Image 1 (spheres, one colour):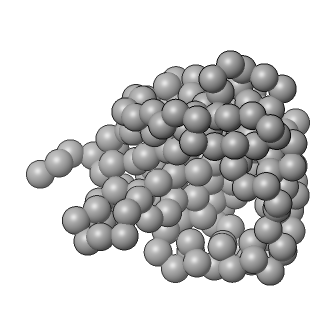
Image 2 (cartoon, helix red, strand yellow):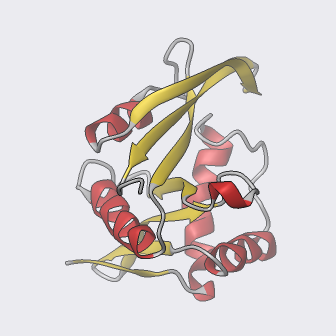
Image 3 (cartoon, helix red, strand yellow):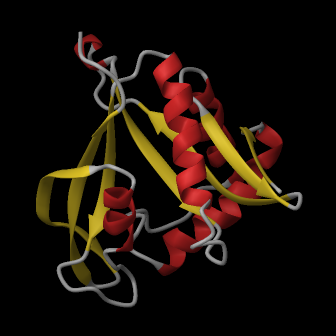
Length: 173
């Protein structure tokens, strides 16, 4: 049975294993080198100071995580945030991503967040490092593509685009 809970600092090693795969083997993350465990712990702690950082466990094993972060560092943007999700590479297609994002959206609504933004690596042509799966997933759960930057990410000797997707989860009053 899947359980979603707030991340704890003790989760950092397992979460970093999930993330490191994407850094080292894909263009999903534009980082070239995975962060150290201490740096990753600090990222988690920094996020938890203001936003939710959620972990999904199934049968006692972490299968993925999602969190929110600052969209832009100005007060007028306080009703917005950027969202991020990573699933264990063997745990896709089981509904974990949708469950994590639904839980994250519920938590963000309680904080008064209305606009969600996802920054997604986007291939010019799909390849072994990057497909359009993330864009398709975000569309299925209600996101709309609102922007595209061309050839702004360079990894594995190739140029990749980056897109922004947006979802409104509340009313603008």
